[in-house]
Length: 176
Image (cartoon, rainbow, N blue to C red; front, side, top):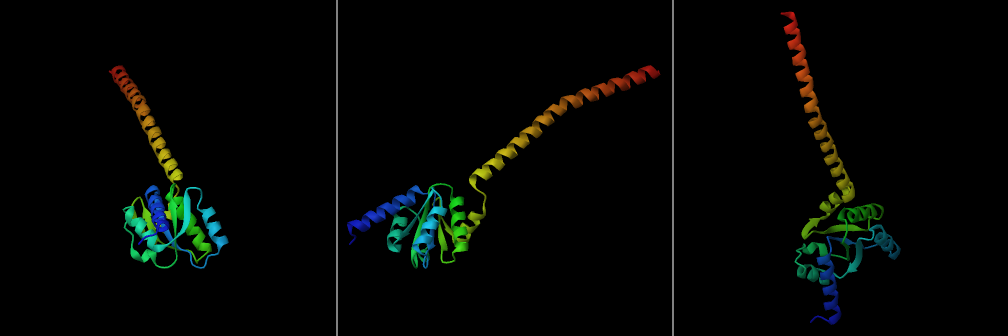
């Protein structure tokens, strides 16, 4: 039978799963407390890294409507709950794991969809949301400028064509 402490922990984890854009499960075996502190700082303000109990986390994920593979809950597990840009947090985890091979990204969830460790690493390779939005805005601005130039060129081309026709007509009229 569940103790009140365990029920409270499951409720808290369920709430974190529901309120997060993403959650990344990692194995932290072999990391020191100082390294974990550095990892938490590297994830930024929009992510919370918590060492969790596997059974309680599995129950909380199920209650939140998230289906995760049971293999993700083997060994010591910690979860990065991301409330901001998932790309930024994925980059933080990837970069930290390069310097500290004891941190192993197991998998996770993004907007309710389960992800493998490889998919999370691909997510980390993306540019940040702000960079992608600025590139999109630049593309739109460029297309608008091209359209404006095209619309401006049409009347001037028409005027040049009419002038050329008049000149040709004057030449033909003058030659007769």
